[in-house]
Image (tube, rainbow, N blue to C red; front, side):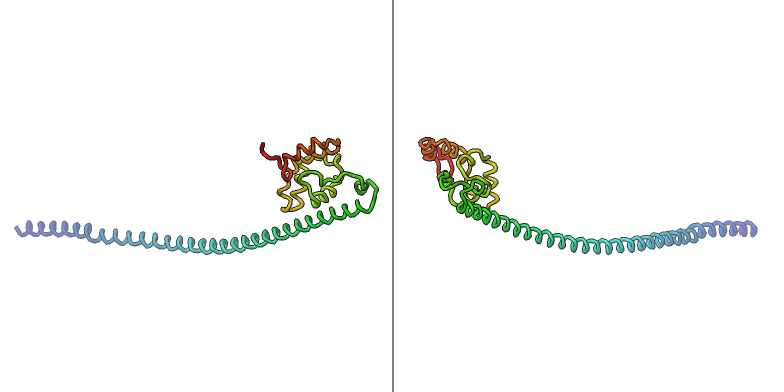
Length: 205
């Protein structure tokens, strides 16, 4: 009977030791393994965070550099626009001075090389053409009604645009037609045409 009790106690103790080993020691081993894995992942995340922070610093430095370069480009472009506007103003002044010089030479010489003689037709008889525009046309070697009659309207418009904004209201669309009538001596037809014009513009009927 004692042997039975002894053997039963041994078996019960062995079973208890198995339970303790399974539920306690193995659980501690699993917990320890999980903790190591978590620490390893945490270390990897810290390394990745450091890399991202370094990239962010580099991107901020690039942004500052590009903003500086962009500002320099804006400043350069503004200076170019100012220089371009100044050159355009100089060109307009030179064109006006050239027209005045041609007009002066035309008055000082009877040679057809420098312009029409004293009996040459006056371009100011054309509706829409005044003294200043007449000088502009002289600068383009347009002195007579015949010259103006053969002129291209688009080229006349370009001449006015290049001369400056004060000539934008002038409309050369009818100038060649008026000049042709004047060159032919058809003054009645010219007067009839000009009666329907104002500043070179055809008026609605």
